[in-house]
Image: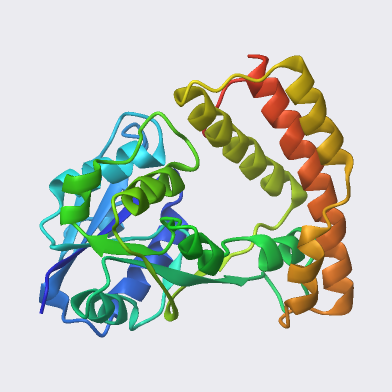
Length: 294
């Protein structure tokens, strides 16, 4: 048995975190071989008493804004040889830790697990249909050498080799770290059997909030590499944004978990989100807006 540290950043989301912790209590992996590190990213937001004095739970505060700063605090405090990352709104299946640890102990360096999106009811609204089809394509992420931290498990030693997450980023820091690891030859394995459930965003407003945060991460990474955007390049970005998203059609058609009406709704939203994501990027590029955690 290898000791595992599960790291979860939390930002004003205690109700959903309680569901996540309940799921972790039911893990098939022996309880004395893993710890749950909860990092509160707003120390002024008091930790509820229900999370205190629980077995194998470590509570930390991280004042520096950003989930990656919180995760880094968790990494520094972790005792495990294996680090498992998930989010406060995720619900890991019962064999999550056991299946991931087994895969790592059998030769994998990093694991990108499946993220299963679920709606508030059987009938999905426009935003939920979009999230169901487009959110968290871990298989594609792993193919590119990355994984989102909603479901990423790796050996702790890899952070010694690659370094910690980039705390300047409010979004995309997991992908940025993953690509650094990939360049150093640290392999990644995608698994359909290592699953966390994630709630679909319920409104287009929530999708826009995420799009704004993601755009901030994309632009911040570009700026960190010395990339600049001329007016001509910005015009090209805008023109491309107005072209209907043809690549997404194949993904919609292949999705067998949504109805025809939900597929149509998802496509309409995807076109709107493409335009708005470009709008946010151009605002950030020109300094009319700042990357932020929303």
